[in-house]
Length: 263
Image (cartoon, rainbow, N blue to C red):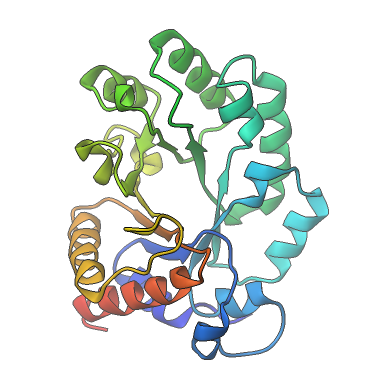
């Protein structure tokens, strides 16, 4: 399986993964994903990672994870989103059995498993006791990188940030940002190899649909390269997938990053 050429050139210098939520290849960008075989194989020939959203909506068969590994190269990584049954239905309460199931499933990815994503609903306020218990339970089961995308303003306080940091949980930088602080990642600096700057860009002005302008892509390329040169690994995921904009935006960002690295 060929390694992703453009992404690999960036990763040879700095730890930067650029990709999309899922690995759909829209017709408008098909020529930028050459080769044959499944969409995932073609995608993995160009980009270094992806975010699995299927785990949020349903529980894939464990054999599906094994197939995804077989369809990608050794350097390819998968971020995996926690099920909505945990984040939206149970709202982080009494989730131990669900966490065990999820971690057992994504464990089939082996060394290909990248960050776990905890995406919270906008209605979920920060409650210290609930958050402390949940992230403590998650950390008792998983020592790898975890990122959280909260969407309620109460999660963007010093108290909430400190609690996330205490559990080595990185906070996502998102666009559109619900509050000003939500635009930039909050890195758990004491998390060692679990520290990560993770961006999720959902599309603006029309969420999940709008493509980003070249000027915005260039600004993000500056921020990503500066962060990575500061010693922090970076993940950049485009979630504006509904109209197929994400793939082209990811490739454009990758090209902009590679230019800054002299590739």
